[in-house]
Image (cartoon, rainbow, N blue to C red; front, side, top):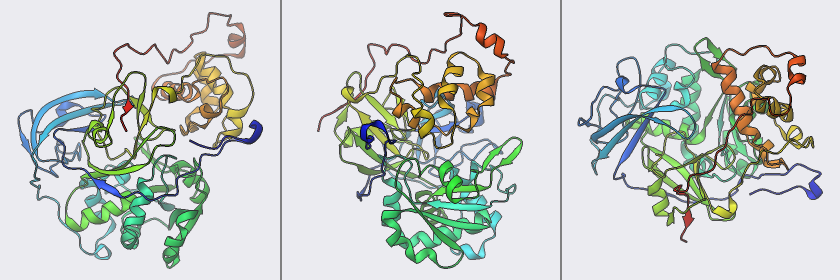
Length: 458
């Protein structure tokens, strides 16, 4: 996928793709699954058997919004644990071939005449997570230092975001205006990979500045953009208030906001890049949110075979799925298929202290120590070493010659730090642990025989 270093001296480079691929629109699926993170079935108003409309808010009052992207009949409401580890309410719908729209959304023709609260409320009601993830209540909004609208894709094998920019360059100025007014940010930045700066020169006028970003992973990640081109720290909402000073929104989401608010319709579709193999072609598809990944695999003549992988949301930061029924969501940018010969297997080998993981970490963590402390269950030390600052970029595991599951170990430590009370462990206690006594974290088990990964028929 990327360029390995010469004689192993320099870190490898994972360049983003500089290419265009026409976006092919997929029809409304034969079945759709709508996911709502961290909620219960009781938070959904309609029941099994009810008819719902496109754009209808399915959430109990004050709980949502939870927007239906299809018109049809609800077949099932259940709890689903996603491949990312979070629990979702899954609403299975049999869609009608034509949409019947809920009319509660009103169009906004002129963004300059709407105030910030009105715009945030409309964006939230249309089903966008770009702002609701910061604050689900549009009336409670933090002071944003810098707003970055990014035309970079987050994964080296995704080109969906830059293709949206190529296709809708004329709407970019409206997207900047909309988000600038909605967020009330002090400064606006349009982040472009250097191969697209010739298109973005027209946006250097006025309050917006253009940041030319080297198209090398992980420069497109929101955390890195906030660090290098923003005010330093990515904005996040929490129960205790707000943390950070920089908001990053993809250009695809920004352009979709313009279309949805002007039409008075919700966010229905997501553009995803499909890739397979190390050198397979990249294809862009616009799918209705809730479409199973199987529909895209069928369109690309890809089917399941044992010991391959279906990876959602990027080869570097994505997660493997055990079912092609996993639906497309607003947060998924890419679908990647690995043949059995390309699957990377982690091993429980000891750290060789080569230092490559530390050298390549973009947030300067002591990755080798974090991995070992997490493996031994010494989570207090993980917290002291800043495990919560990990951005899951995957570069440490990518360069590890021992093939240690560093990302998973650190992710597990972060989960423990956030969800449990950690007991103090002294240095004497650590040194007194003998071989075979430490609570080794078992992250991987043998894959079941009936596991169904993938084969590409093309």
